[in-house]
Image 1 (cartoon, rainbow, N blue to C red):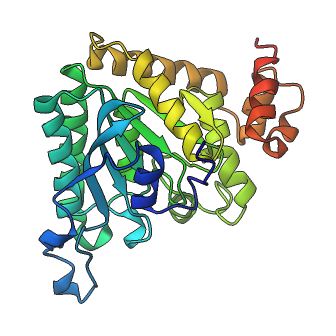
Image 2 (image 1 turned 180 degrees about the horizontal axis):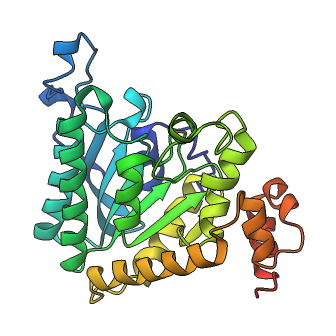
Length: 296
């Protein structure tokens, strides 16, 4: 079994660790040398793959398309070329009809150096995700990286058929520093790393229903969870109906927890006996503790 850390790997290492050996074929790779047309104008170094790797391969024998963001390049930020490669992969899924599309997210959101192009790209990615799902192709988001999935990519993740996270992963719309800048440190102290993970981390996202599965920080764990998520997806489900259901769940969550200031308060309200102890548990012990909770 592949027990290598998913968190510590880069984009290409994650693809290699998840997919069957030798099965990956890259689309529009770095040999094409297609870099962002905007970065050079700002004297910012580019990358020949523009921070994202896309292609096809097999996941435990299942034909899949996969995209992996390279968080080490500009925080995995989405620009024009980066977004076009991801959108193109999702559009190709409608033609090839693989068993799933895997999105290995590692992004702080839109690349500020080309913000307008990045924002347009996010909208195109969202539309392409929903179009692929409408054609019966599951789109699975994997979040267990250093940058997590923030900003526009946080929205993209929640448009997917399922979100799989590790404790180390983070998922949110606005990043901690952004919230602090706009609302003040009294609203959110971005230097309190424990608070950041209690609010945006994988454990919390699993507990409030935004992550379908919480897995250990291992390649094999993510691969197995992705296979299970593919099997659980209903190819006939209307993605719009699924989003409407998610909206109803969000409204119910706001009603239940809208006055809470910390994940600890939410966990206590969920009936967890020792919420302060949850961050100290490894994934297996955490899942056992959650399974034993007494929900109101």
